[in-house]
Amino acid sequence: MTMSIRTMMVVLLLFSVSAVNAQPVPTPEKMINEGNYRGTPWISGGVGEEERKYLLKEYAEDFNLKLEFAVAQGDYLADVWVRITKPTGEVVVNSLSDGPWFMTKLPAGTYQVQAMGFGKKFEKTIQVPATGLHTLVFNQWTKAEVAEQTPGY
Image (spheres, rainbow, N blue to C red):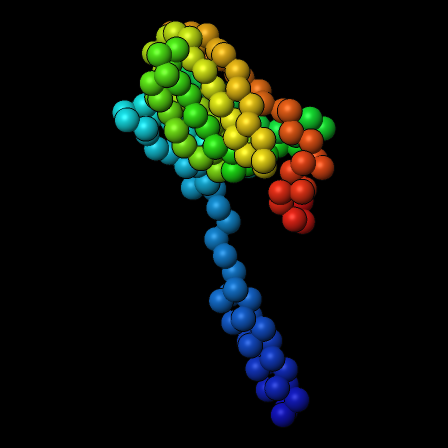
């Protein structure tokens, strides 16, 4: 009988420890980072396929520019600084994208988009449409460059 009480105590203890250590599974909507820069809305996220599907389903109609960040070999990147300016040089978006996708809604027109991170800066000119979601991909980083800036990558 003493043995079964000990066994029950061990089982109870293990169950208690696992219940204390259990973390809620984050849902895609909890992983999305939203904000605005001087009235220009933006959203970032896209870590994992489920989160990217969620972004497209829930937000694609609300935004007209999507930026994607990846290494040349195809792996997505996060923690890329985004700066979008008008041809006059006026900054309309200046934010950190904490996911590999960054979406924003801009008035139709021409913009300079800069993606900065991992010791590199890339710039592209884009014509943003009034409707629809236009995608601009920044994939000029290499795994070696990212690894050099991010130990353990």
